[in-house]
Image 1 (cartoon, protein in one colour):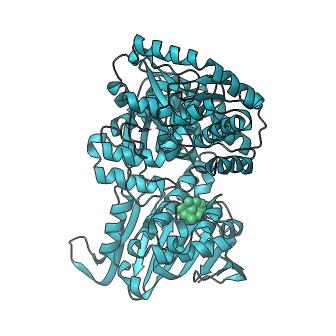
Image 2 (image 1 turned 135 degrees about the vertical axis):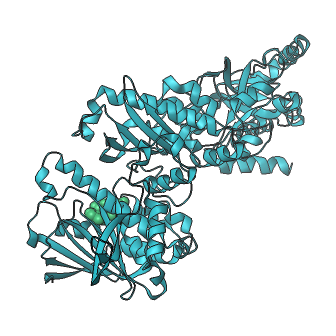
Image 3 (image 1 turned 45 degrees about the horizontal axis):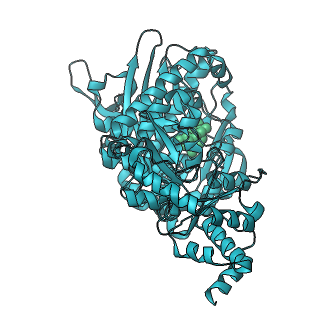
Length: 634
Ligand code: ADP
Ligand code: MG
């Protein structure tokens, strides 16, 4: 019998209360996952003990057969999970079972609106972990002792999951952790042999630690006769208990791969695809990489969880080993098991080990190949792209060596479909290029409509030349790191001189030159009127419907990037745009006929309009409105 002393009642961290609330309401139809979470914790605890015992065998306290045991009592309505893993001391218990340590979680919870809180998918974005026990239990008791501590350093933790918990000191003979779930009235179905066994197989087959359940039989003597009244209990292993990645590919079923994914990624839904590889030779490792079907809440957090679960010769070393994949593949989840590192490797050592760099480059290729394969399934790839596309777009800047591979994986909006969905590949574009076209044209702006309706596209639409419509914040950054694809250079249609290559014939070019000549006087007058506002004024043939547009010099930073950098507090030297005028437009004709203040005002209006159409901001919008109104009422 344990006697508890030094009882202390403590309150849960606010976020834990929120999480508990959210979980209990949103996971009702998914209640069984509690078992997966608790077994996963027990298995982690065994992994940790095995790792620490590498240096200090005594930590096993004579019991090195790591295992998880599950028992139930249907009369009492309890389910008990027990492990002989690392265990916890009082401090650990208060920190681990009273707060949520993961950074970003609190922020995330705060942002959830009432409606969203009912959405089970949201909660799947982060592991619900230990607290998921309260989906099925109205009270949980934890008894634990840290391996290596004295027997009287045991700790008991109790809670009804309603805002507070009690911790107390207890005697505990064995190290490791025991978790007793007092099932809610409507969750008593879980106190059942068959139910528990099938859940263990469903969720924990691939875990290397054996999960055992008791079987009680009438004792028999050597001849097989029952021995009156007495019973024996044997502990039978219920799960497969071999690490999934160690098994040959051909022997692992799709369902097993999916279940394992849910374990490593703490996700509720299936992965989009995976790649399982064993490498022998110079480097020796096994990797199992997954592409999730949805983004974790901390995808864009600086210190969000990323990387693979690292094992060295089957011994768990660490979660989130981020050294093995580049940042732009941070959405990839999975396991790496290698013989090339030493068992006592640490995060610091990983940073210095040249083998790590080699494995990283191999895994990066694997991951990119896996995405290339996924791209054959249009629908699945679109899901991937909509979820992680803007992360992958960081690739060309981060990983110069794989730029071509990454380029092949990119998807964009384009005038071919005029849809905001980014679903056109560069290869699609190149295939559709016009006779004589030698560049891949694109436009960048804030927001899809700003790209789609930009005046810069007018000539391209008229000639039936496709233009990529880039409307993600990161797009200009991306394009500054891409120079060509399939031998074709990229060209921003809003920068530099318009060059349609051989798509235009000589006659057209000649006619344009002549028009430009005939407007030389107008150009001069406009430049005088606008003075320092513009770098240059030109006659253009890129416009058909609009009177004017602004263009940036070829190597100038674009408007979108400027705004991002300015928002980040950078002060940039001013750039003056080039104003281009459409010689065939009625307003330009009117301008030509105007003089004095009327000329100056109209020239100003054309410039301001062109800036607005670009998504730019006017220094003095009121002045623009005033001039425009004067024009309208004239
Ligand atoms: P996570 O497993 O993602 O860290 P959990 O909520 O599942 O989050 O668990 C919180 C922490 O509680 C774990 O990181 C671990 O330190 C501790 N813990 C939970 N269960 C056990 C256990 N059976 N043995 C030892 N420590 C445990
Ligand atoms: Mg956990």
